[in-house]
Image (cartoon, rainbow, N blue to C red; front, side, top):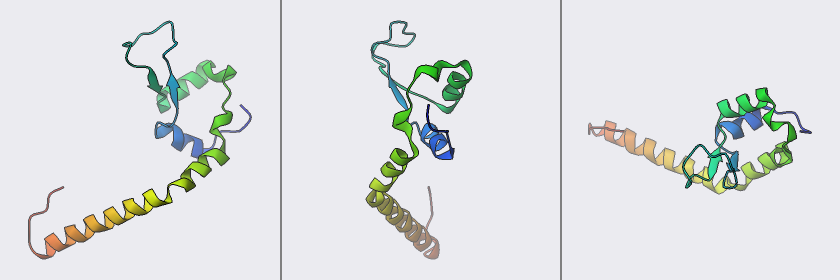
Length: 103
């Protein structure tokens, strides 16, 4: 691996951003219909300690590629902010009107 792992790489791993196609794995220990394996942080750490990743090219996980994907979804981030604000206004209006509030 050419690049040092940084906190941004950790975020990708925690969010489940690394998946592996296991459809051609000969030594399966899970059901046949489960072909995609999501690498969890514990699994990633364990594999690193065992040296499982020594022959794997992590060039797909560069800081530039991660940051480029983050910039793509500005519209999605804006929509989430709008939904959160709408929820907050609705919440405050229900409290102001003495209506019950549930989450």
